[in-house]
Image 1: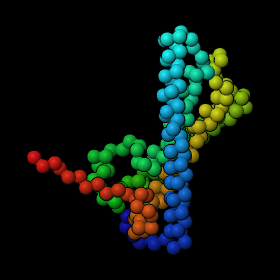
Image 2 (image 1 turned 90 degrees about the vertical axis):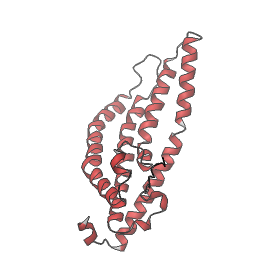
Image 3 (image 1 turned 60 degrees about the vertical axis):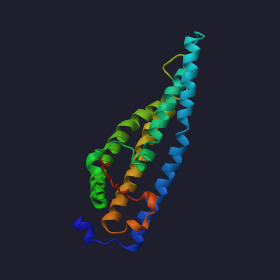
Image 4 (image 1 turned 45 degrees about the vertical axis):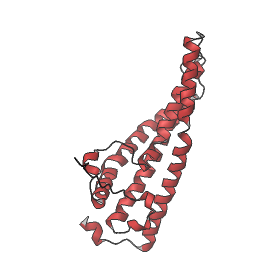
Length: 201
């Protein structure tokens, strides 16, 4: 924190960081709000499959594949939105009551040491896997199942991109906080301060 306090980024650099944070957060918010509607589709398709199988004793592999694929697309696609909303798992017993500067420091270290290497490794390992699927024009392994399995597999790469972009946005937010420039961000993109009050006995 001392190092950041001693190094004051130029005004142009600060504005670039703010612009990046706003843009990426807006993109992930739109993606998240759109893909969240897939939850309704998943419930409807799953309900249809159950009724067909146990009431009418018929089965359509395409529909069975569909709700699995919709789940995969939704959960990978909204990863950046979840990070934006701070919905990923963390040890809140330490993080929640911490000061804003402590949170910024923890996020900066976490993004650099854990998040970025994590998504880079996943991207590098998934890329040939996805490329092979596209070359083969891969479809479902179930007879009569969904075509275009390569599209579903591509969402592994989408996951790494959206979460990396949002992670870098939070890295930049940490820099703004540690250099005393957090007020340049809109309130909804700033760190939330929690004042937990113990209930009266």
